[in-house]
Length: 334
Image 1 (cartoon, helix red, strand yellow):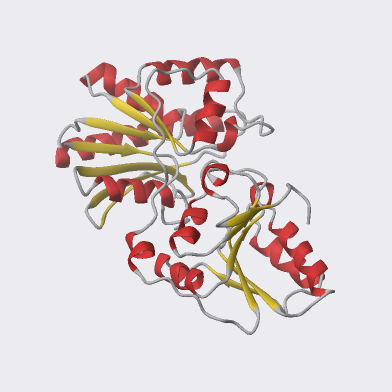
Image 2 (cartoon, one colour):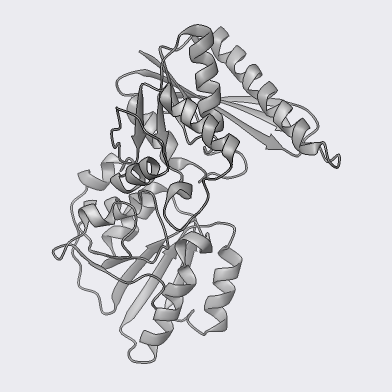
């Protein structure tokens, strides 16, 4: 079977971490099917640029389209160029790969529209995997009459809806996205997390670990640092290691510096999956203080390495964390 993945989030020349979970889904699918990915994104260049590469057995096709800085009509031009980008990408894939047997659209709504068009034109069925937190209670990110009607149409015509957690499935249904075939497909944990021996070291200082994309609205890393500050005033037998990069990285680092916690908090920046696994192995517990998550693969990675999780009740945590493997903490309570 030939499967074409469509996704607005995917590792690219500007952000190697963007949509990494989609790439891992594609990689897992490539073990039983022929998989290619089309990713279309705006860039600051003057024209369209295309790139092709291979990640393991996944063929990846990139189309970068130019943005317009013309006032008022810039958004219209951007939308037109986005459609042109998909047209170019699909033409390249059809020429090199042929028509797919199945479209796997990730993250509604725009990719779902492309999938629906291909279904109408070529009779190619599609499924939808959703990762987006906009449906969650308190997020208020799923709004707009036209957006909702288009999303409902896209969902209605899909073969199946594959949210990454029960939490997300319930939120989508609450928002009126009804479909007879919902099936939770969790995010992927790399094989080597399970294949390596669990390491239980005795440390002179307790080693806490946090991994983040540094989006404060979601991750609340500053809240973790506040907790470090409180704990530091009582004892000095612990350290916190933070892995990751993102838009709020400078803000969070400067905050850690301003409250005098850099002596026990270590920022390591971006690390490879293998390096992340090594950090899990040499930690005592993983800490997550998110305000919301749809899945949270780092919880699964921590448990795969045999490490307990201290977390808010987000994503898959309510289904997998219990008194034997972790601890729940209140939201926004350092």
